[in-house]
Length: 347
Ligand code: TTP
Ligand code: MN
Ligand code: MN
Ligand code: MN
Image (cartoon, rainbow, N blue to C red; front, side, top):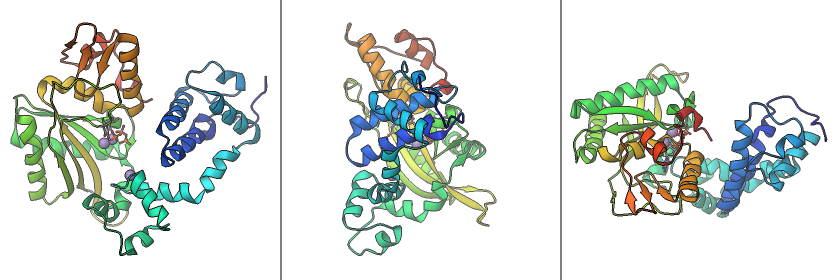
């Protein structure tokens, strides 16, 4: 079997980066299904202790199809993959990547701007026929700050601010970090918090109150409050829904502290979610991610256990009942799984 030539351990392309470029490009081309296949393959490569050094090492890995293996083979043999290089140099890919890096700009808007012949932020901002919505306006205004990774230290500083706001309204409420930081990541694109409120109904009033408080403290730069549309009569669906129905808000806040820019604050993206108490364990599991892990766990629940899992509930199709859970441990037990630690969920 062929030995991989450029086999510096941890060559990033062999660790899935090349496959992620393919996945991203497929997303931009409106092929989410195939994109997901490459994301899964990339995730498997990243989970290996070392980059594969021989082609046969990839043979028995899950989720690596012929296509992915051919790309790994090409990279190991020639140091790069021509299709990946082609995409990285492609004007459409580069422009879509640039535009969709703006908060509030999804693939549809990015494509629309590209098709109008726009290629740079300057062209977008100077085009009189383009009306940015509030989210996109904030996205451009704070582009530099919110493109910069948030550190764990900054996340902890934000936790104190959020905690202070929450407990000033409901002293017995509590705040936990979720998302990537809960999975042990050192950096994130935002900081996600989940709020636990002890009494029914408080989950609906807490977020508007926190937003008001941040406003008064002059640290609120942007907020999008989404009221709860949660309804337990609705069964978890078969299709993967990325978004939940709990009360939540997407914010940009000012975090004080000396910056390289010379300013004494930076803008940071913050997400808050406030589920009803009896839904807390499901919400925590859903918001801890990763997105790929959630997807795979739901798929496992459905195919291997005949149960429907989402952000809100676990439904047993055999008995037609919802299974209640006070903790994440309860949910894994319902699924017949050992507890999976948050840091093991970085798929
Ligand atoms: P994100 O904050 O988007 O991702 P992340 O925290 O895993 O990574 P990053 O460091 O880049 O911020 O989402 C956090 C989790 O919340 C995610 O893993 C799954 C969940 N989530 C949803 O359930 N629905 C959504 O629409 C989003 C955006 C996230
Ligand atoms: Mn975007
Ligand atoms: Mn996050
Ligand atoms: Mn988030």
